[in-house]
Length: 252
Ligand code: PXP
Image 1 (cartoon, protein in one colour):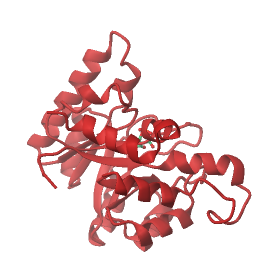
Image 2 (cartoon, protein in one colour):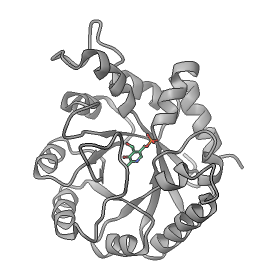
Image 3 (cartoon, helix red, strand yellow):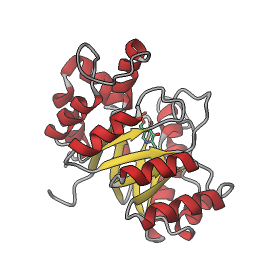
Image 4 (cartoon, helix red, strand yellow):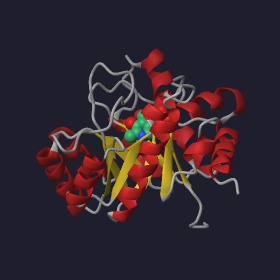
């Protein structure tokens, strides 16, 4: 692989969302008539060139189930990135799975999807403890934070190797007058993080339109994209949807 390329991590949570809408009361997570299978979806993403697969095992298990994560761990060839809340239960689960990467995210019961970055200034001690436990097990940890200088400095102070900058505010502002300001905030955040030695990932709300601008952020290593790819797969199939996004991220 050309290491100058911007990597694509595909978040497959919403494949599981569709399954749960119909089959949440079934004990099994796959097989027979239970569909769609997120593991099969992930395999199609791999074939199409996804660089990693991301899943978020939420406390309320609204989409991914523990069994999905276990099956992914057994079958994926590209790295598995597990998004997790800062709780003892998730730390224990993650240490049992040993994913390649873990991304620490906030989790509010009421939100439809992850709405804001984790406040690692306020949550410093809890984050430090989870970070240490995971780093000790060889898991590469990223912190999902807003592109705020205080948050970025704290990530570096805590010794996190990677940050994922939250692009949600920018994505929501895409068709409004605040877009340029949001983009500048991300740009400044990426610059600062890079200066402090952090690997810069980004994600949330990235789609086939805004990807053209997001990809021009400085020092980007990987983008994590879920909803737009899962949605487009309904019309174009998984392989074509992943291929198209990966191409878009690396247009010269
Ligand atoms: N990155 C993180 C940390 C997330 O929590 C999510 C949403 O689950 C994403 C990326 C992907 O967001 P979207 O589904 O809007 O592409």
